[in-house]
Image (cartoon, one colour):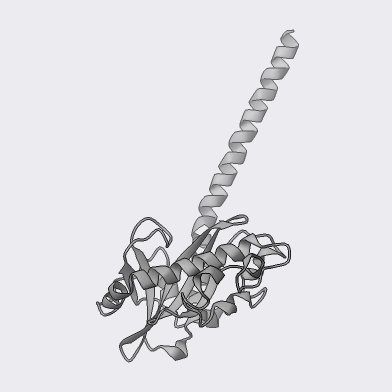
Length: 233
C-alpha cells in the first residue's frame, strides 16, 4: 500500500511540475511574440488602408489623419470610433472605418470599410478572421475578388432587403459550402453604411476639425512613418 501511495504521489508531483513548466513556457512564448503579432496586425491594417484609397488619390498622411466619431452598436467597440481620413488639397474625399462581423462561421471577422462623402463604398478589406481555409477565407483579396463587389455600392444600391447572399434573395454571391461567412461580411458592410447615413452631418463636421493624434496601439510609430506599407510587403 505504501508503495502504491508513493507511486501516486510521485506521479502527481510529476504531472504538477509538467503543468507548471508547460504553462510557463506558453506564457513566456506569448510574452515574447505578443508585440510582434500586434505589429504584424498593424502592418496588415495599414497596408489595407492604401488598398482601399491608394496614395495617388489623396495627398495627406492617411495613417496620421484620424478623427473620432460617435459610438454606435453598428461599429466595433463600446466607445467612440477612430476613422482614417483621406484628403486632397486639404479637402476630405473619403473615410475608412473599422467594422466588425461578430457572426462569422468561426467567430469575429474584422474589416475596414472605405466610404466617400456621399456614402458610397470605396473599398472593403478583411483584416482578421478565423474562417475555414478553402471555404470562408475567400473573403480575403488574395483568395478571391469577392469583396470588390461592394465597390461603388451604397445603402440603397442594392435595396435594403437585397443586402444578402443570392441564396437568401440578395445580390451577392455566396461561397460553395460556406454561406455564413459572406452573409456576415455583407451585414457588417451594410451596418457601416447605415451608421454613415445616420451620422452624416456629424461626420462631415468632424472631418473639418483638426486631426487628432493617431492611436499608437493601432498604428505603431514605425509603421506610421512609412509612406506606404504596401510597397514594403
